[in-house]
Length: 187
Image 1: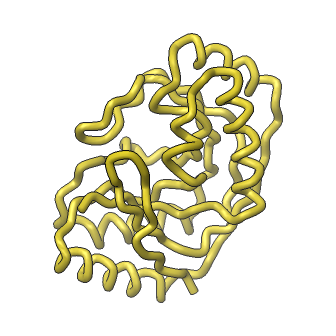
Image 2: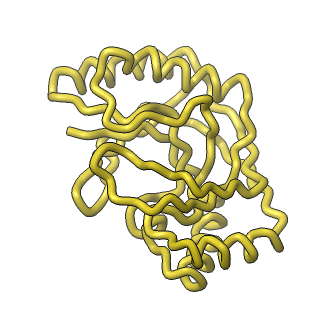
Image 3: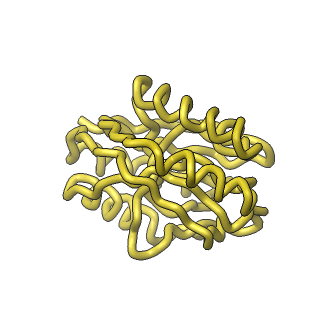
């Protein structure tokens, strides 16, 4: 099974991001961010695992989480990319609009821990390097014209959202949806 490794946003932050995503979808027609994912921050490469590998991976993430406290991150500044690649076999446009995540030592430590736990697993998606954390606002089905319109809309905004990171979620990648498989809470 194919898994993504993410931290979902808390409910208040999710509502704020959903409002922006809905505005962008209405303006641009890009709906993938609304239909495929709940707002999140990716903290690990996408991995493909069998049942035994999944059990071992979850156990390693539990050990990792027992040594990490929850922490806060700032989401602000718009990131505009015209070079999105996506994961293996994923159909995507190269356009993406994102909310940038300000890196902290806690976040980098978590990402490094996830990388260590998954280093022997097959990667169907590799996070861009160097790591550039973000929260997707519009992607995958965003056209060039939609990218331009969305960029103008977001340039008029001063977005600053504080989120609490308190878990690691393994999300199964299904053909037409994503489904949270398991969640490991930070202490």
